[in-house]
Length: 54
Length: 460
Image (cartoon, rainbow over the protein chains, first blue to last red):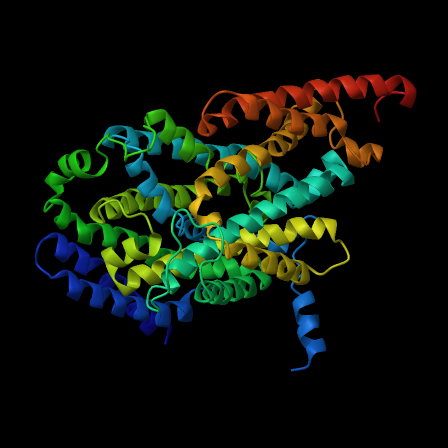
């Protein structure tokens, strides 16, 4: 459970930053980047609280 | 669950408000790194970054000024605030009471708590600008002073309720909330800036410095704005949190640190918040053709995630600020449980947040409140380190049973008055103010204690 949450959190952060790098490189349209960032945000806030220590 | 049970559970959130923190409650370095990173990657960073753009700072002045000012701020946290915090383990307010006496502490705590409330209110207002985006809420303008619509008031109260609830749950929950949010927020700032750079003509890393000079930090102020230099950037980034470091406000947080050097955890806040985030928001402002409203510029860079980031960045700053306000009010309401005091402070804060003037004039307020709160931090520092080396008594009020320590009172008021009268820009006033407060407190303490000795039979 915890390992899965950590992996999902990492994917959430990757979805937050990688699309913007691709926009910067001219490899992705801005709209797709915005949608992927939203998905990354949801993934982060669902998964991170599972494994972040109090 | 009965009301009585809820009250008992809330009262059980006792956090050493009036006694030193116990050894078994101390925190590790990561707690402070997370808290600082979360607290200083705030909604206001979306305003401060554009400020430098609008004031026509050049790119070299901006980057060098931020590096110098933020390093000085971190050193102040680590070398001024943290050592006293870990030696006393007391809240700032309780230590102040021991030095200055209950009456002066009473006055100072009211002033301090009101300023924390106003600051937290501004954060709630910033968050509300982003929450209102999808609702089509009419945004307040730069010139608005009073609530502009019922929707604005409703959104502010909704955001305020969440912030107050989290602040009531206490330091551990706040630190945890900051830790969860901060990695994602830092990346959103960077991602939003990266995504708008092509629109400014920057399509590779090699283009950045040219675009930074020609399109972002151009050296030309917006119409009606004054020109900023390296010194403005350095002193602003050093002193924008002076109430926390030299002003010693973060004693209340760093008293939980196992070691004094945990004060260097402030580096995480300065680097991510006052370096990366200010650069990113400056880029977003330039891409938005000079727009400075937090919600729209964040949305323009990162879409929905950007707007949510503004909301959460406002929360993570408002929470510890409101927590500090609760601690300050509790000193003057000793028979109240902390959660009740924080709730009262939260209601004041949320009502204040309804007034857009709080957000639109935030920079003026930040400079003024830093200047007002700083002298008492200098008093605590001098009392802790300098007085014993001069053979003078520390914590005079607690030792001698004084209701007011006049050396501290005069040092505080005279420093603020002299600085207010100085004919220099507000960003530079705190620097001479530190020296004035130091000299006045040490000099007056020596005078008053030596005058009192013949009557009292000498020092104890």
